[in-house]
Length: 198
Ligand SMILES: NC(=O)c1ccc[n+]([C@@H]2O[C@H](COP(=O)([O-])OP(=O)(O)OC[C@H]3O[C@@H](n4cnc5c(N)ncnc54)[C@H](OP(=O)(O)O)[C@@H]3O)[C@@H](O)[C@H]2O)c1
Image (cartoon, rainbow, N blue to C red):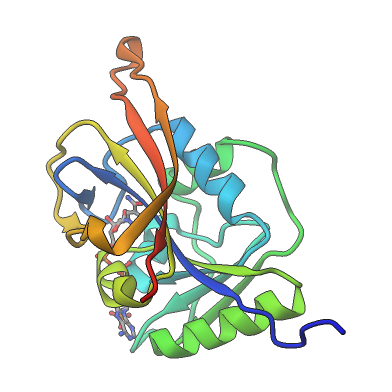
């Protein structure tokens, strides 16, 4: 008998500087193609949930994924112009046109409910919080898996990821990516963390 109600994991994916900065002036602070590839590989085909500001930082929906945008007040969700952030993200890896959708919801709970319903109908086992600072902070306590890239440099920012209590997590993957000094790109480490359940 197949399980009609399989568990769908609530994951977060984020790239942080060593001082926890994640953004400035509603944009990314760095350009690290290896991390964008990692983001694309990890999230493609699965629903992604983001705050209204992060959606505006992209300008339009990321292809090949259900984009669920959380806002208390946003009535219309027009497809805007692709921003530089969007162009950087789409430059990495395969291009995808199928499976793109955009949804607007007014609470995090509604976003999670909708994302799980989409994942279930697409037979996926995971949904992703993709930022930004407010949404990460409001969902970290219920996040079951964290895909965390730590860049080995401090950056000046105006948006930060909350402090991570490493005692709450098992590190199940760790991969170091070397610096690229000729491009002024610092080294970084890709971690996958699974919440320790008691
Ligand atoms: N480094 C990374 O991996 C990464 C990833 C993503 C984003 N970022 C960066 O993060 C920054 C944006 O983050 P941010 O904290 O300013 O904004 P955000 O979290 O993307 O969006 C905040 C907005 O989400 C809505 N919201 C938040 N909590 C809500 C709730 N409980 N219920 C309903 N709506 C809610 C509100 O929209 P309304 O005001 O419309 O009600 C709020 O203004 C940018 O700099 C971006 O580049 C970095």
